[in-house]
Every structure is written in C-alpha cells, then in structure tokens.
Image 1 (cartoon, rainbow, N blue to C red):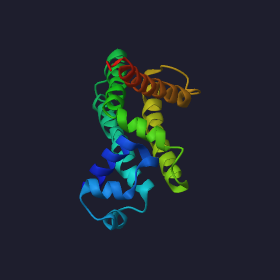
Image 2 (image 1 turned 135 degrees about the horizontal axis):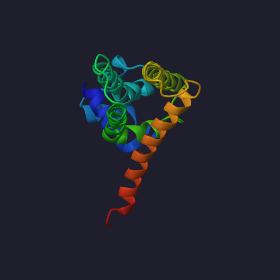
Image 3 (image 1 turned 90 degrees about the vertical axis):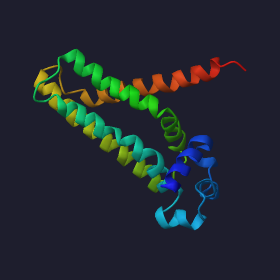
Length: 173
C-alpha cells in the first residue's frame, strides 16, 4: 500500500519516464528492494498504482446500469447518469489520465501490452453493456457501436484534459 501510494504520487508529479525506483522507495519510506519483491518492474508498478484503480470505475458503472434493469430509467436519466459517471470519474482521475497518456509511449513491451489489455477489457465491458441496452431500447444499429463508444469516451476525456490545460493557462502568474 505504501509503494502504491508513493508511486501514484511520484508518477503523477514527474511522469513515468522521469520517475526512478529510488524516488518511489524514498517516498514510500521503504528499501528499493521492497518494490521488486512486490512488482516485476516500474511498468508493473505503474499499472497497479495508476491504471488498475482508474479502471475500477467500471465496477461502479456496471452497478449503476444493473440497478435500473428491473425498472428501467427513462432514456434521458439513463444517459445523464452513465455519461455523468464517466465525466466524474475522468475528472476525479484527471492526473491519472494525463500520466497514463504520457507514459503510454515510454512503457516497455510488457507494460504496453498490459495497458492495451486493460483498455480493451474496459471497452469490451462498455460494448457489452451498451449492446444490451441498445437492443432492449431499440436505439440504433449496432454496426458502429464500438466507434461510438470510443468517440464518446474520447470526447469526455479530452474535455477533462483540455479544461485542466485551460485552467492552468488562465491561472494568474
């Protein structure tokens, strides 16, 4: 737990590339060897400290969707809730989003594969839930569902990232 908290803090502050194992160990107040007893490498620690907690959001999303299956919400309430959950989660994890985006090109092969696998599991879950709801409600063709989901989530993530950049740019010096 100490390593995960320290890694999250240091990765968010310095980024994946600039962060060293020694810095994480010092921040955690443990010996560097402790990190390697629990994590294969820096990419593995990054995944557990930032990506996995961010992806845990999918549980909350699934629970919200399942809560309305017996007595379906009206279309507007359903979409407000589901898009709102994404927006709130992305806003809460803004620094994590930025750290993941910055690290994606610097991860080793295993780290890149793990990142891709986590994201694909996330999108597969979104696709499954959306497909069931679209069929149940008769909203649209399933033909472009995957692209629609990716564009919607990308738009939400971009609005969060850009709003953060805008706030920094507008801050008084």
